[in-house]
Length: 135
Image (tube, rainbow, N blue to C red):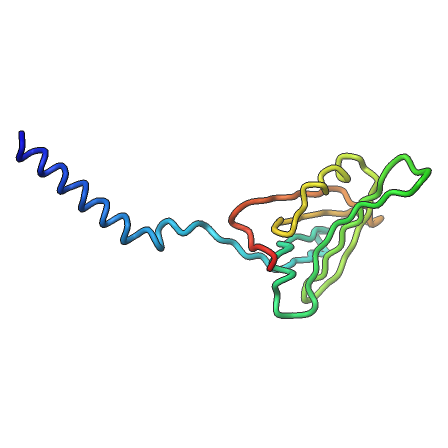
């Protein structure tokens, strides 16, 4: 029994050392970096706010903002994006899309679509540890 326990302890110690040695690379976490993309044919734009802010060029941007006016019952959403090759914006008063914009922060991945009238038709906000943080 002592030999078996000694073997088990030695095996666990070896496993711990092996996992620790791998830990720096194997367990570092998934990281994803997305430049701003504006697809004028597909009428969509997406990217990471942090990546756009941190980019070395002075071109890319990605934003959504809400605004409300006295006497207006519904706030408005405006989203805009500029890639290295295209620029687009859209707007809407659709309550669900306005509400979705409240989830955006400096580390968000944002995607929006629009129709031929320039109205926003969808807004996707993703927050996660894999997205590049705004510095």
